[in-house]
Image (cartoon, rainbow, N blue to C red; front, side):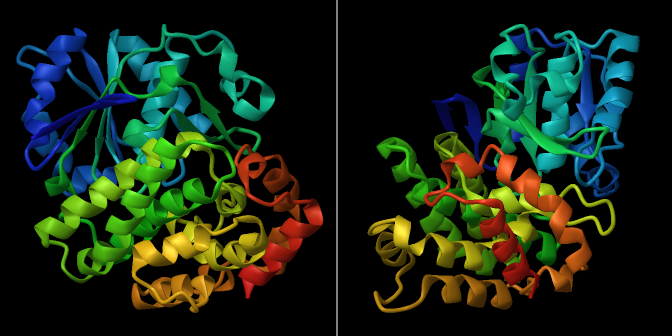
Length: 377
């Protein structure tokens, strides 16, 4: 069992979920709100976690997390939290459940509206240490939200924005790869490429942060070595362990910043119909963004190729597109149900997204329009 304190306390290994009661006791959490989704509950993972709740604790369950977390879901869960006097939140599931858990913990202890705390609206300094404690238990390997300082939410007005602060990081992350065994192959691929994108974009972001670069490159190496194994055999214990580590490392590192891949995927994720999976969006957006940034990253693409074990003369964008194809992921946004009419309203949100500021190469509205249309296919 590896106990790691980097940004937060992380218990990482098969069986980590069995430490839940002890961690609840340390936090003084006796009446948690368990935040999850119906798929996690139907798969039996919620019951598996609840077996390890602290004795005598009284848990409430909110299992209506949408695929992309919304302010409306937060409001409903917050009402439940307050009605029964909860004293903490346990997020169980993918990034949506964990991000929703963070939003509940924030608004349970802070005044005003959720929009008051969004990063691009100047909300980060308003988030204080008074935030309710969160324990995060991932059941996917992609978002790394269990160690992330932020969360992405769809507001009631339709904007998909992020809030973030060191205070938002969960107090404890219980990373148990066994909880990912039931992930279907398509979800394994999409979430795995989310981890890939986090590591890749963080490494290419222009800020000077050698520790974050080192963590990102380690995570990227794990992802390229094990993602295909995890997709091919969901019970491959080593592959599941390595992909959960890659996911966690991606989020550890992206405190440094992300880039245009997420600048595109965040507004795309606000489309109501079709509902688009965030990790799969990142996979599809990666190749055109890699080409766009090529002249602005110095030797970083060469270093990525070395970690991946690729020849120096190959085209990195083509290699990512080929990996997506081997994983059974779509090649274009059009294959995901996006059309031209959906693109133009997204462009201002992409320009304003907090991840755009840390892309290696500046982007205008016209640049994003070109990228969206290229990715549309």
